[in-house]
Every structure is written in C-alpha cells, then in structure tokens.
Image (cartoon, rainbow, N blue to C red):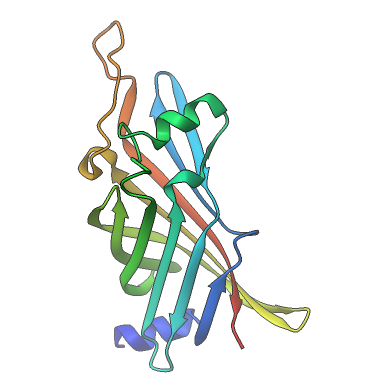
Amino acid sequence: MSEATATKSILPTGTWQVDPVHSQVSFAVDYHVGTFRGSFSPLNGTLTVAEDGSATLTGSVPASGVKVEAEQLHGHLQSPDFFDAERAPELTFRSSAIRPAGEGIEVEGELAIRGVSLPVVARGTVKEPTTYAEREYLGLHLEASIDRTKFGIEWNNTLPDGRPALDNEVRINVDLFLVKQQ
C-alpha cells in the first residue's frame, strides 16, 4: 500500500482549520525535582488532505503567547534566554510526511523556534470525524520530544550538586480540534 493510500484511510479528505478555542500546544520540561509546564495560544493551523491521500499539516503560535502558571516568568521566557520573541515572534511547524503508524499516525516535519528550523517526528492518534451543528470535526493528538539547546535555548542554572536545574529534553503535546472548511 502506498503512503498516500495509507494516509487516506486515516485522514478524511478536505481542508481542516484549527479551532483555537478547543486546541492547545503544551510543553513540559523536567526542572529541579519536578516538571515545568506551559502552553501557547492562540494556535493557528491547517490540515489539508487531498483525494490521493497526500496531506500537509501547518501550524504556528506567537512566541509572546506562551502561558505559564508563574506569570512573573513570562518576561523571562520572551527574552533572548528562551524564545527571543522580539527577533523570532513566531514558532512554526510544517509537515513533510504524514503516515499511519500502528494504530495511530506519524507526522514528520520542520519545527522552527527562534528562527532555527529542525526536523521533528510526532506520533499520535486521530479521532474519528463527527458532525455537530451541521459542521464536520476531526480530532488529532500528537506528541514529540525535542532538545531545546539545538534551537538555541541554552539558559540554565547549576544546582549545588553540580547538576543543571533545567533538562534539555522538552516534551511537546499538540491537541487539535479541526473544523472542515466548506
């Protein structure tokens, strides 16, 4: 079975727009003895699936849209130590391949943070499309891990025992609520 045919069986054709109210991009990174979590909003994105099964997923979030529980950290996350929002105001993703993976889906693409674009592979699940209020909806959940230092996010503090306070691995979760365009 070709990749296009396989993709067609898991993603319905059409153009699907991200509903930013019901969609979220979140991240988690180990920090000291716990986990530091945050999210981005608003999320903008489109999934386009052609009749032949080929598909493209694109998305973006503003760097200034990072949300964390400790509001006093917002300014630090905007600074050159982290997202450098003034020079790189947007984080973007564009898929290069979408294919079935076991019971789910695998999405390869380019993730750009701070103006640095690197390949990333996300794996996840597709919810069956459903119709509500005369609109068709589709759910997509993806997970990926990246090394933040490869994107130029190198800030850290050293703990008294010599270990870094912040891990380099960042886990990304993307929950998309997509609306089919007419």
